Length: 453
Image (cartoon, rainbow, N blue to C red; front, side, top):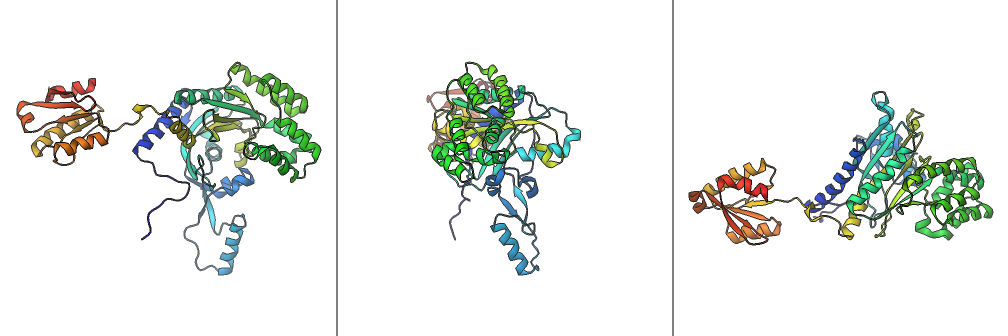
């Protein structure tokens, strides 16, 4: 029999890890709800047609397709072989697969809004904390199954939404203790760059190449652009664009001069409206190399990076002014952000940022010293549980040494000892393991004493 294992890019989470992850989730959730966002959950799988074509060619390749159940085994072998050939060549074939695991939370959200818009009060603010799946190559900070935490608002074009989402990022990471940079750009600036370099048809090629700048460097980006039929003049403009530096005001002036297009000037105005809310805040950075490879972004785009750990982005998002139009409901603007919880967890582990109080294990262990004593201990434990005090009764009678070792291994701070002697006196022994101090308490006083400590 082979040893049990896990699919690559997936993980098990023990109690300690789950407590830490819940700490992150609860921190993010509390900030979302402070800003009026409401929870939403959608299915793990979507119809494949819902997902395909929404993330660009690179994204489509990473969608986990689900094999149809109940395949028609009487179908001709040639037809089945042709269907599999379609799948292997990157095409879809409904004879093989009609569904897929969700790639992100934004497209399912857009699908939800399109289906339920008649009953939604706009602007609609929703947050969603659920796992997503990507057929990516596993590496540090990159998994095939991971959680996303999204906040989106649809039905409003106001840039105050972008300002609030930026502030949500700052608030969450301040509470988590992570020093971050929130990088901001505008897709219309990238559109203006494409206009100047040959036309709108080059937008996807340019943004896809620029999005790889951090990973492959400027020379490889230029090489990739050359392979997309862009001439040396256009590549030179893009190189100048990527070399824009200085203060936030200087960057805006430089991009206005380099790209004197209508779309660029509109984008510059938007960026100025947002940046005025964060004057003097060095955590908010204009980054014109930021592209965010997803095709559906149309306006402001965000990316968050930890300053003290090299792990890639730990958050990102942007404006998508017609995402629901993909599902037959045009004209509903939206903007949203996402938190990469798994990378945030890795950052907090590396920097030792989790509070010592995060682990919520048993607080009190009642020793098991025989049937009659155990019955009394169980009765008292139930009283404590009604007060939300976490306690357990050792599962069987055992020597003191064994029960003490159990408490120490589980980091249980208090033990309550009730044996025959204590049953007669009506007093329990309460021992504090860290200090070794012990006190005797009437059974009736035990609850109030433990509530205090």
